[in-house]
Length: 92
Image (cartoon, rainbow, N blue to C red):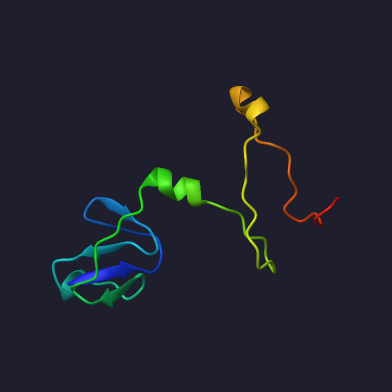
């Protein structure tokens, strides 16, 4: 049976992230809390940990756009994250 992760979960010694499609052994392993059934011909998809980090963005409450954290190249050697305020109005 193939399923899609609806939320973060753990199956077969692997973290499954939302959108991942994977095969489970049967109905007894299905969890309606974080899985949805998909057709058997749906291609399997796994989000790796680095890919998940690359896609990680902040979405402030009430906001419809996404604000991503970026690292200033000048500060990258020191490991500092650039200053930003996700709640500030654009143009400030």
